[in-house]
Every structure is written in C-alpha cells, then in structure tokens.
Length: 270
Image (cartoon, rainbow, N blue to C red; front, top):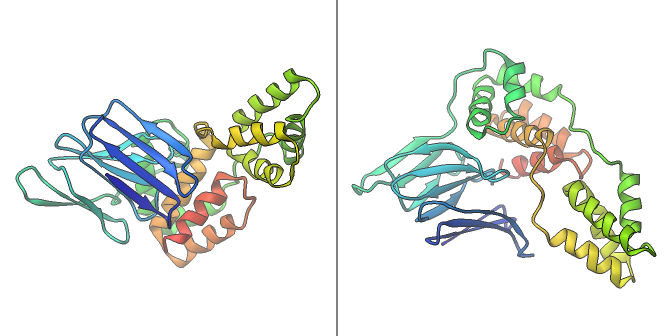
C-alpha cells in the first residue's frame, strides 16, 4: 500500500511484513523505517504531511512523521483511511463495517503556555501532541506567544560546515573520514552546503562522500528542532491570518532551520 503527500515530497509504504518505510520523492531516499508493528492494513498522510495514520490490527495509530512516535490511538478501526481536506477529521471503517469519524485536533486551551512550549520539545509524542492541541485551542494567546519565541540555534555555523565539506577532499584519509562522520552528525543544516558541493566539485572523493551523507537516513531531530516543527504545525492548524503571518515570517528564515522548513510545509497546506 502507498500514500503520497505534499506534491511528491513524502511517500509511505505500508506492509503486512509489520513495518512502514518513509521515502522522499522523487529521489527515493529513505527517511525512516518503523518496524515491529502489527500487520499494516492501510496508511494515510494528514494533508499537512506532519502525521501518518497507520491502520493495524483493529486500531488506527496517529504517528508523528518526524519521530515515528505514536500521538494518539483510535479504535475500533481498520482500513481504508482518509483525512478531511483540512486535516481536522479522520475517517476509518470499523471491523463491524461501520464508518468512524474522529476529531484529531480538538483540545483544551493551555493553562500554562510556557509548559506547553516545553512539552513541544519532549520525546513524549503523546504529551507533545496534547500541547499542540492546547495551543491551537487558544489562538488569541498562542499565536503572539509562539511568534515571540526564538528560532533554534544552528550549530555548527555555516563557516564551520563549509570547512567540513572542504575536508571531504583533505589529503589524509583520517581527516576525510572524520569530516564525513561529523557532517552526518550535523544532519539537515549541512545539506545545502553538501548539495552545493555536489553540483560544483570535480573531486570524485567529495562526490562520493557528500553523496553518501545526503543519501543516508536523516539523524533524529534535536529537541529544539522538534519544538520548532511542532510549533509550526500548531500554527498551521490555527489557520488565522495572524497565524499565517507568523508562519510567513518563519518561512523566510534560514533554509537550514527546521522552523523554516516546517513553516513552509504548513503554509503549503493553506
């Protein structure tokens, strides 16, 4: 089974072999693989691409694309699955052949915005999802609060990344290997420099090593990157002009930032 979202940006292949594999389209690069699942009956992306619904043995799991974490579980249900165009509702057929509809975004307004902000950075996908829904339920307070938060810090700097890319062609093998290892650790912030190097280099060594880093599955997001992506997702749910203004400001930021990419994805779904 197959699901595609975002004009060919993400692809998900579900399998009765008990795994789900995520790939970038059209490159085919594997982004993630979730294993040890119950037999998968169907998969469906939310319209914004941040969530994948996975139907297994009588239940539907909402999984966060960025982490694979289970955000919420609905039962009884199986295949097929479909999100409403605005992403607020999920439909599934139950084992009794009834059609079920779930509201996947409603929440209770956050009593403490700072606590919700902290939850967005956590490894607990359930708590983070609850915090996102709480923020989205209170646009008047949440939008200016989120808009006032700083972007995640980039480390290393663009200059340091450029030096690492240059070191892919260093005379010593140990230096070349160390630079490749560090670029893998840096992850997405290094990708623009690596793609530039691939386009411009005449060195087979740089081409091979830069290509290998870009083809490798991405490293897990940092807590700051998780929070940035989840905040942009919540603003996309809110959908007001004020929320869109914050997203547009974030979308114009440094392309290496998770916040920038997530804001662009949220705006594309408006």
